Length: 288
Image 1 (cartoon, helix red, strand yellow):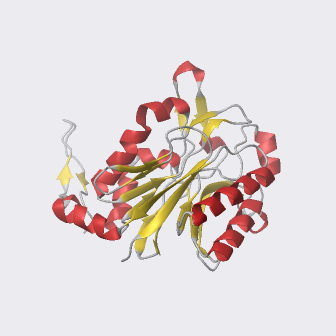
Image 2: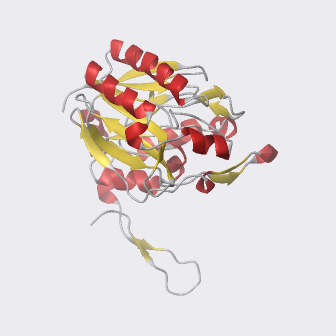
């Protein structure tokens, strides 16, 4: 397993997939020029659109999507692993998926992942979101190999479900991805601590490309794209909400070293929860 450079691209996607694809290309080229061979973009790279009718009119199938086509071309031209953190894809059944896509250095699609956990929340000051009203949740965690590392997929709100990351770590992932469009309100409170926790718990690198700033549809996202090492140290950060590229070295051997020092993936045990309600179900602490 060799050392390689990873990049997280911070964007401020608007309502036009065509304009966002132009921004995507500029930032991906900047990341590749800095030596990154794994490049990740944020959640909803293609467009952030709150209005339901406008959203329905803008999104299309994977084979016709301009962001997918742009990413495939760039991956092949630049010889990089290009991870579209997510974009809205129209499925064959007419439903929308919040889908991550990974393209290899030859432009081939290596993996896709549909976001599992839907952002259905009611925050302070009247901020409310119902992602499940627009998107069909995924049902399958995904781990795939890139550049000698194993990459586990997640998108944004998935970050709050540590069991997903634990399952991927147990499947061999030493690099975990969390492309996101975190709200400013939740980002200021939880973004850094949750990303560092997922890295520490699993002895894995975490790369989290983020949306940032005030978007055309009126939402405001936190930015602060991060790369965290397996010991929980922040090794790269865009400490603002402006479009940017951050780069850091990924050494899969460091993940193995962290897991050797604190082998919690191996030490987990089955247990029951006694809540005073009779016989408790057995819970799995680790994969058998």
